[in-house]
Amino acid sequence: KKIVPDEVTGGGETVAIRMPAHKVALALIRAAGPIAAPSANFSGDKPPTRVSDISRTLLEKVDLILDAGPTMVKIPSTVLDCTVRPPRILRKGAISKQKLSSKLRD
Image (cartoon, rainbow, N blue to C red; front, side, top):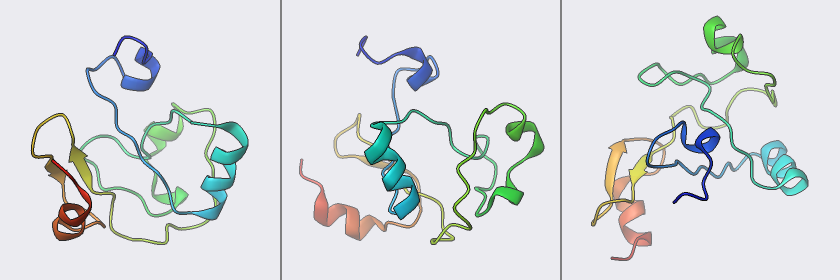
């Protein structure tokens, strides 16, 4: 929708929503409200599990990194396209197709 700024969508037509399970990230969201932030890797690159894994090129483009230690789950986020019916998995990740199927409604 037009109410979603380009800074959130990267100028694209869709937006990705991620909800972390980490207590530090959740505390920041509770204190600040919704946060628009990029992934810690470029599209197609292996997702980092700690700050030292983030590419120098990406680190030079951001103002702030929240470092609360290595990720608890070493598998990247599952990416689900909800603009189609039924929703389609774009990237397999920590949440299985079976678990998603049990939670999604048509």
